[in-house]
Length: 337
Image (cartoon, rainbow, N blue to C red; front, side, top):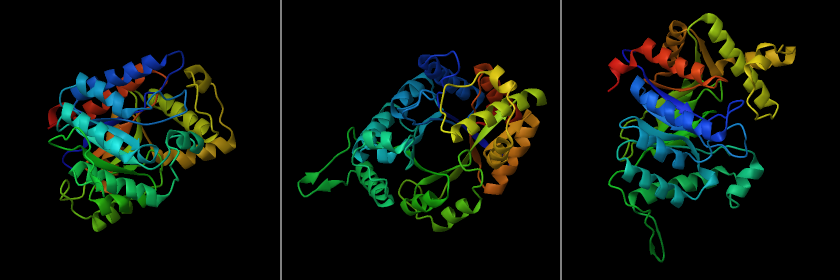
């Protein structure tokens, strides 16, 4: 491909020895840097009941990020729609679009973003069914088009912004790709969650896409964990940290963030090494030349012109350097539109 756009998904991870305020401030600083480096968009996630991740309210954090930047697109990656009222999501994002017109992305998913007990507390009416999720998406479209109502009259999502945010459906297994196609919405495929997701997920989405007022053509992006080091040694060090984190996640351990010394000296068991091999498709790592080659191949394989990067590290300096190296490799400053 002649030009691949790159975005960033940030989860506001609370590193060892840092505070939640540090984590949020690092997210904001990363967004400012991302804009300067030529990244196309900056998304923040929704997680609950975790001391490891501070990002629980993307719609709030997005205000600060969009205000601190000038042109990069800012979005949710994503709002876990079953945790919320569709009307309130519409109002939150219409307010964001009013404040920052033409810059807001509403990425939506149906995973809890937490455990089911916490999700039930967030929204006691959540029955975790696909039919309820589809009904919420349908209601959301009506709220954005000002066509929602009951027998008692119209229900307007205020403020009635002149434009509406770009809407994205997040999918890791492929099932939601058909939902994105059905509603005429954009699709973000989460390879960082499911390393085995295949290009045919996007092919099926394009084949079944129904044009909408907002999206006359289908549009998809791919998201993946990416770790880039100045040297192979640094890249391997960052990769071991990511492997360790994912192994801990699979054990149900979501914090605190491990320190570098613990991970450096850790010897993986045979079972853990098997899980690391299993998860390998979720991660791209190496020097900037290696990473550019791998991301370029992924873009070609999946037929996308944009990839969203997510990077976790015990060192904020290493994380920032990773984004800088990738920007250099792809000449993002020169090619950003």
